Image 1 (cartoon, rainbow, N blue to C red):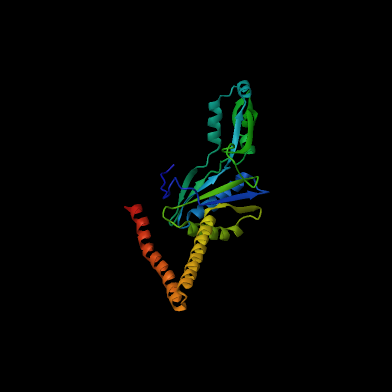
Image 2: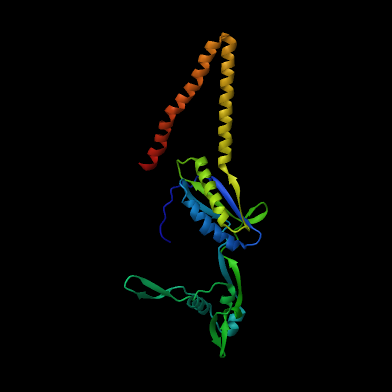
Length: 267
């Protein structure tokens, strides 16, 4: 596997969980949509560090060999392994060179499902071909059948989105939701994509609570000033001075906060 670089903090929790479910499609096909269609597109969103797939169900053919069947036909495990490798190739066989372009010739010898693996000839015994299906059980399965995820009591494929350090959680989550809304019409109608958990919702609620608290505090301060001074003109001056001081404080904090975030990341 080639080296990869990810700008993320492994200690940070994902900011968004998306769950894919379907009543018609198998989990292996649902996993294909999650891995190749959604995860790769979401990874290109600005501020997204990586997209992890939980409960991955990549399609695989599982072969369970029967030792007695192999011994009765005089077949060793190395013969089975070599026959599978030789009969399941997907390599270019040559190149046609032209004056302006070159085309690669590929022999399509790759086996696609358990039925094709089952009929693969391993060797011959007493003049009769010994096929892989004669030596054990060959079935359609997934690579890891011990990993699973659920959403509302149903098997699902879950996408966990992590943000880059220093980015705004709410802005990244909004960008991901906007991309998902554009991709949703391109997905089959049998695939349901729902939000499992969104950390930006709690942040929005916290910001709303802070705004409400500031407004209530401002109103109480103005009321107390009016009750003590009993002067509308003096109360008006205080009413204008309080919000201007708050706005000025945040205006001074913003460049300082940006400098504290960006400097340690790049030096």
